[in-house]
Image (cartoon, rainbow, N blue to C red; front, side):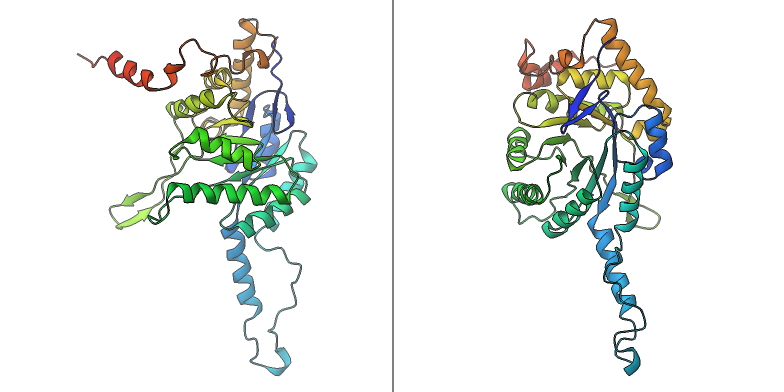
Length: 334
């Protein structure tokens, strides 16, 4: 049987299938269920800085209600709450319970909007025992005054600041919309990222024609979305000094195998588990094990990156040549 052990962010995992950030990783019962079904590690949902700040502002407004209206209640009618942890309290409780009750690594996730917010909460998550931290950078470059270089600099400054404040292994989850993803990946690694999670899936708004409003619309990923991830994992393998995690479109055993062959250290699943249940994870793991064992691979390391761009006989297959061949090979239905 093939040894499926892999390493990610300095963590030794039994196999390369990780339960990605999703509603399933947001409560202890589902986390225990994911572990029981074989998740090699779990990524908690993101702690959003806006949520924390919103609750803090609301609490402050409540605390100061009627302040100064009565000489006997100069500071308001509520007690001092100097040490009250507002929005982050529930998240930290989840992290504490996960660390106490799970035997697999627990990766915290942080989505912030300011350098100060990112660094502060990164330190808090480290203090509560997270095994690693994933920076979930979800930023839509809607300011037309900012150049691509400006946006990249914001990302790099963020990673550099967080890196100086924590000792935890640090992964950065980014989207694919950069003019030179390979070069930017190298810059992120140089800034302090130990791992790159490719790619963040930017959810697109819809228009409600009845209400004439812009409406959120969460659509689960489809397996075909894995192709973009596959291409860039293959291109980056051996060319960037960081672990590579593949996410988006990872639905079945074949997807995991393809991504490992392309060069992924781990693969992350969310949509497939939401759609098919946590038991699907066990079936995928068994399928991956069967595929490699049937082909007499001794270890995952033997296979990893064997079909990366640096290893295949035709490196152009990941670039323009693939585009031309794809168009020329298509045959419309008669």
